[in-house]
Image (tube, rainbow, N blue to C red):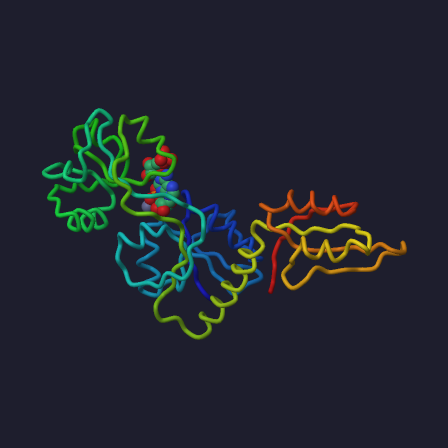
Length: 283
Ligand code: PRT
Ligand code: ZN
């Protein structure tokens, strides 16, 4: 049974659970238990605050974790980053009062900067040769300048709305983050086998993203043209129809090309075109 630590509540909780469900793993988080086992996969969920996830994965309490890359970077515990997961995207940025002129990073020399990410900020300031005082606060960092706690902030930004509504402007984007799957550095062979199965399922879900399944009836005389329009994974599937001179053609297309392909196929006589969502593609 492999244990995975995921956020108990907060921005990553729902998408972490949704991702596991999408991989066919039945998880029951309705009772909000601290630990819960999947009924159909050798996985046990450990629900915790995101701040603690890098530690528990690093010390082996959990073998895997889903957490923001920002937390992994800040905490600095040794873990493997196995996959970027494509959700929870944000950045950590320096922001200053809107009315201030910004000449460049030298603005911060001698200033006080409030943040919950002191390690990432310290490394950044050092790399730029800037001396500033870091004020560590754990919540509502955006109010620090107005409250007189600091001159500027270093905080997570996503849409930028929070900065605007607090009279601040983003001046340096320092760290790009998203949710990542992390693992302990010394997995047992059983845990590695479960992780491999998870990665196989993740890859199948990833390949199917942005793709549609296309079926149509087409005159046999147009088949060569249709196959040129539709280069599929290996080649399109062609099935005979009961009506002589016609066949059914199946293929996979990228979302972005869909309407161009449909137009080209109609022009060579395709009829009854069906466009279907794909759940998984297993190569
Ligand atoms: O209770 P727990 O400690 O588990 O949760 P938390 O309150 O520490 O974290 P939570 O749930 O807010 O965020 C978890 C993770 O989500 C973060 O570590 C990031 O990796 C990721 N994430 C993605 C974000 C955001 N987007 C985000 N917008 N985390 C926080 N914010 C906050 C930010 O702090 C600021 O207050 O949202 C505000 C800015 O948003 P915009 O859209 O107004 O720019
Ligand atoms: Zn947290």
